[in-house]
Length: 229
Image 1 (cartoon, rainbow, N blue to C red):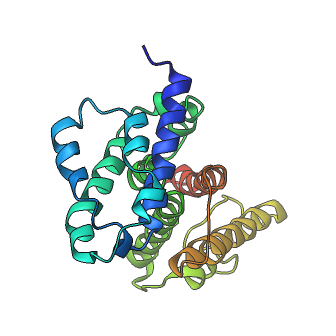
Image 2: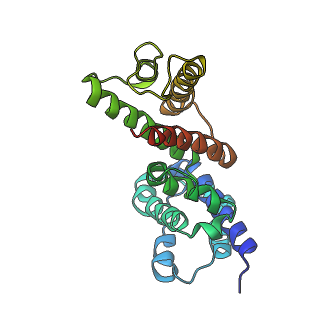
């Protein structure tokens, strides 16, 4: 019986292999056409170790230009494997993530968990902050009729002068003003510094950083929930 540590390591190796293959130019992979039939017949039984043996990069790099064959045959198999990984129980992927996901906002889980489990860390973060932005945008439009977006949306919605969303019951006190203004900058900074760079493909995120960013997105959603929005 395969232990959890061994299985977790195999999953990570498979995930890394898939990313490596997707980074290769499709023109050098196309002669590898028998992979499709092998996986269709043996996918339930084939092991992750077998996958590494079947697809050494040194063999793939010798193949010539068959872009169409690659796109039609090889890429769907990689997508299937990614789908399998993303649907593995989180206890197998990483036991430490059990508490993490249990503590997350349900809307962030809905848009980010599958991407995260599939190794698409940057995309999972982008989806989370897109959800934060859309939530605030929806609230602001319903209250004011104005359709704003991004940093300007956050600065307007959480302004201490005429806030659309009030985050403290006593804005006349210094503490209330500090909370309102502080969260205004956190919301605006998150969209400007995290969502926007990812939207332009300038943000590289590993697993650890993704956990930190997703926690921040969940915190912001929880603050809105706390205030009844």
